[in-house]
Image (cartoon, rainbow, N blue to C red):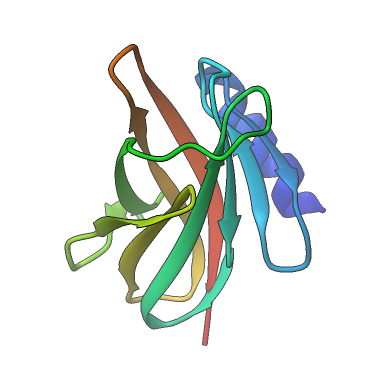
Length: 130
């Protein structure tokens, strides 16, 4: 719970909202409020991991054909991932972010969701464990 509260305090200036979505998932709303992202998992092992992001609109309908750019940062250490992050649309509103977690601890999955009308930022807390 403390981790979620700390993340909410961090995200408040961005205008994003984050809420728990299950034991190993989280939900975030983009800073403009256009899309809701469900990210699973938010606790990962060290090394390469795939994070599935399901994106829905304000009517709770899945959204396809978006451009999703993502990056991994470890704010407490002042660095990002040592490997490039990739994002692939899988269909049915699911976008897979593949990233490398070289250290255990708190990471931030952040990025943008873009369609023809707008581009909005998101950020989700991810924990890497040994």
